[in-house]
Amino acid sequence: MRLAMWSGPRNLSTAMMYSFAQRADFSVLDEPFYGPYLRLTGLDHPMRQVILDDRTEDTFEVEQSLIGQPLDGKPHVYYKHMCQHMIDRIPRDFMRDCVNVFLIRHPARVVASFAKGYSDLTADDIGFAKQAELFDYVRSLGQTPIVIDSADIRADPRKMLHRLCDSIGLEFDPAMLTWPAGPKPYDGVWAPHWYKSLHATTGFAGPEGPLPSLSNRLAELVDRTLPAYRKLETQKIAG
Image 1 (spheres, rainbow, N blue to C red):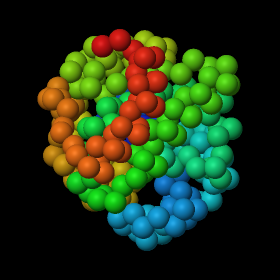
Image 2 (cartoon, one colour; image 1 turned 60 degrees about the vertical axis):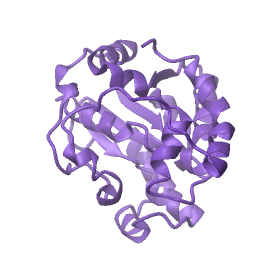
Image 3 (tube, helix red, strand yellow; image 1 turned 180 degrees about the horizontal axis):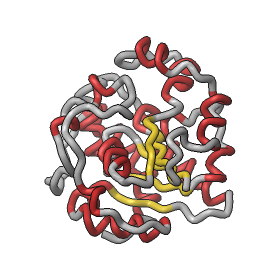
């Protein structure tokens, strides 16, 4: 199985990668299109040059790696994809050969969290419109996209991971509930900037509190992205 997890930033996506990495039957790959995305857009992300030096592949090379066999020989592979990376010149044909899962989180929580580390964020940076577009693309392939909400996972990780595994034809593995603290060998090179707090964890964080209160530009950003979130929310696995 090639499991493609489609998320935006600050959305439990790295924790989910850590979770699947604990399974003996899965290898994982962290944001394979990040290098091509930065080269094609010219965006000045934190650690940009370090990322470009590490992720030298072009879009064709990345796509070929996603449809090839995992290098470690495990039967399944988990791809952590960021929806905002899937700009027009990034290929999508590989999605036909994947089980495509969409990980969602309320825009207010995403904006409040992402703005702490990237103050000039835009709607494109957080990927809600692109996530909805990719959801429709998967449907156009004749597949039924799977949607899961990070809030539901945090509220009851065992139940929701069990339901996710059932929905994609896997046996649930309790090893998915915990991971060792510290950096991981499969982290992207950007981990020192973005994953520092997660490296202190050994499992999923607890339930989230009330939605954050935002104002001005950040509140407007939430209003713009909320319809895309609501579209996928109606299709999510029940919590």
